[in-house]
Image 1: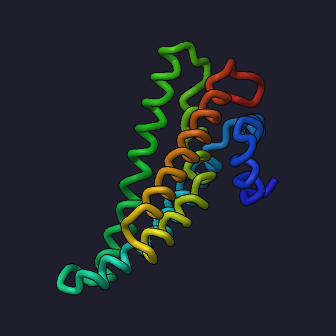
Image 2 (image 1 turned 120 degrees about the vertical axis):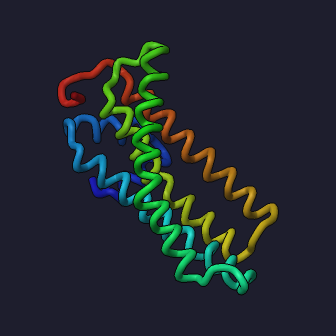
Image 3 (image 1 turned 135 degrees about the vertical axis):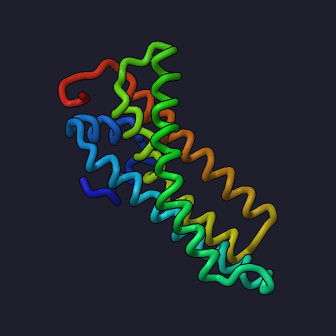
Length: 167
């Protein structure tokens, strides 16, 4: 299935989509692609927010500097943090009986990030065009719930007993 169809399917049945990704075998190239694509889209989601901040605070750093800093953060720093978070989630899952691998835990996190990017993009639009207020908070809550739900259900699937292709 295409990535876009998998993202849409993850909003309905994340476990099924995760099983399909796990059945493809250990594919580090696919995992890093999910992570970098998610970070890239989240960076794009930040553009309206950054533009709004630059317009409302003209005495601060210029728009280009703000974009460069955000680009560096999302494409260079956050991926390292997500690798660490994936490892931590595996350690916690293993402590409560998880039987997955480091790879399956990373894949669950990276896929949840990518699957939640539609909410990130919507949040960026709301925060950039409407600004702070109930709408931004509501969409932020939706984003958090979507990400945590997809990640939790994907991680549950990833930490089941490894079968053929999971390693």
